[in-house]
Structure formats: C-alpha cells, structure tokens
Image 1 (cartoon, rainbow, N blue to C red):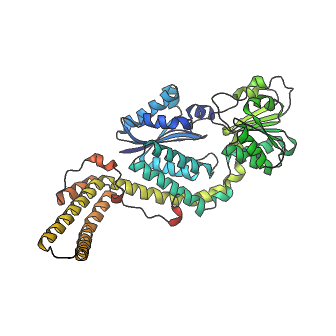
Image 2: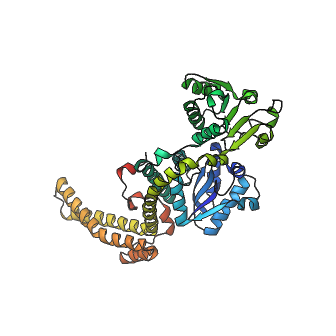
Image 3: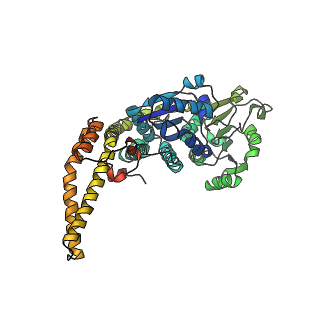
Length: 444
C-alpha cells in the first residue's frame, strides 16, 4: 500500500486556479464515492480557500496517482496539461509530514492560523461518513488532529496567530485608514463573516451593512454587535456596493455577486473591495473601475510580515512534536503486514483455550462454576504470557522494515492458517499496537 497527497495549494497555484478546483460541501460525498474505485483504497478530500488536496491510500503507486489526477481534471472540466502545471504529488513519509504541518497551521498562508484544524477535522469526518477511509487514513488523520491540538495547547503559536479576517481588516486600515468614517458592506454571515465583523468593530467601524442569502441570519449577526449594523438581502447587494467605501465578501457563489457593470455609473472615488470567498464572488475586472482597488486572498500576504517573526518562534517548537508523531506513525505503518499473522495467532490461542477448558470439564465434571472461572482465567493468562514475547519480536522486526519476513516467520513457527494480504486493511483495532499519547493530546 502507498500513501500519497496530491492537489494544489497557495504555494503551487494562484487563487485564479485554486477557485476552479474548489469542492462544494454538497459535492464531497459524490466525489469521494467516485474516487474510491479501482486503485484507490482510501481517500480524504481537504478543500479550503487555500488548498484542494487529496490524501490517498493506493495499491498501485502510478495508477493511483494517475486516477486521482484524471478525476480532478474531469470533475472540474480542466485540461489535464494545464492542471499538471500546478498539481503537486507528495509520497509516503513526506505526505504524512505534509498533513501534520497542514493541520498545525504551519503550511497555511497565514502561519499558525487555527481555522485549518477544524477544516481538517471536518474533511476527515466527511470521508468517514462516506465510507472512504480505512485503517490507514483513520490512523493518519487521528494522529494529525492529535499533534495539531498539542501544537495549539503546548506552544504560544495561538498568542501570535492571525486569521484571514484579521489580515483583511488590517489591509483595509492600511489602505483606507480610519474605518469609523467609512461605509462598509460585509457579504456573508457565516464563520468567516462573523469573525470579520468582530475585527471591523474592534477597529472602530460603525457603518456596516451585512448582505446575506438568508436575511434572518444576517439580521441576527447585525443585532449581535448592538449598534451601527444593518442587514439586507443578497439581491440588494449591487446597489449597496455601488455606494460603499469598502466591500468585503466572505460568501462564495456559483456566479459573481458583484460585477463591473454594477459600479460603472458611479463617480470616480477611492474605494476598496476585498474578496475572501473561494471561489471568488467578485468579478476580477472590478479592478478596472476608476478609483477602485480589488484585493483577493493572495494579496493578504502583504500585511502579514509584522506577525511572522513572532509566529516563527512558536512554529519551531512544533517541529519536534511533528517529528515524534511522524516517527510513531511510520513505525505503526510498518507493523501492518504482520497484523494478519498476529490475528491468526490470537485466534488459534483462543481455540486452544476453549479446547483445553472443554477437555478439563469432561475429566472433572464435578468442579464448581467458581473453580471453572479461576482455572479459565489462569489458562488464559498463561497463554497470553506465552504470546507476549513472540509478538513483541515480530513487531520489532516489522519496525526494521522486515515485516513480510516477520509475518512468514510467525505463520510458519506456529503453523497458522494461510493469511490473505488483503486482511491487512480490515479494522481489527485490538490487534493494532496503540501509540501512547499524552492526555491533553486526545481529540474530542
């Protein structure tokens, strides 16, 4: 089995490409179902504003990656040669390390941002619900969430972390100065919209109109700040945007919510539009309107320098955590080929225990139930003690990259039934060695 990560992110592709490769939440189940075929045994899709990444377990290294690449091109009706210019593929150990860095916020455009942790968790749960994960990705994503939680609780990276919303409001201050004198339209009342409103208010903004598909949700968000905010339905957005000084969009749509034609009749004046949506919800040609400056996600990098150095120190503390988790996962992964043999040995020992108890009961029919339980417990304990050392040695061989040799050794030594390689993917949790975790590393 091979682990691969394939996709695009803010390092490999600009926002104009990333938005064309963004999955909508309602499409994920169907996409996962189509991906988990032929050479792909397990798959998780992580799709955010800064990345669309597929994490795969494949039984054929070349065919699995080709299948995933072809799927992305076909799903998003994109020419395969164009896609290949931006697509990255990461293998095995590097793929594991990449996911751990992503979950910790170390691969984010905004170093140390916390929203990615929830996005990784949501991607994992969606794939689990769709039945597209198995033993390997289940363990991998649990470990990714564990190390990310440690990163945010055991270091100071949260003390210096910023969000996309924070960066956008900082950009507004840099470009437009006193926000309390500006009329602002905020599009979207979801998590990012709520966070953006919070930062706007804390920076003095007091004339804010919230445009949202569901007016009641927009009104609820406007009411939450107590003053200076009103809500309008989304169909009134073009008129509101035409008279606003600043428009910031956090809501994606299947079409542009604001076009250049909506603004052409207005007199030339200094205005600023910020598009945080993925795919983008503002026409990129808005930048051609006199006096208007349009910014998107990729432009936020220009305001992050002041916070980068402080976060780098915390990020350096996280790297050893990732190294430890990576080493533990790879050791666990190497033991997988011996698990079917260990399972077969345990089944044989259970059968021996049952046969021994039946024989004893036939020869000693007068023993009491209590005596029978005492004897059964001692026989089981003796057999388990007998198993402990050979299983330990087999796992140590597997950790030395000699798993197939170890499995054959155990199978031959104890005359076990033939073990099918495919059994490796069956989730027999009791036979999988558990990695010791600190109590505060558990994910809820």
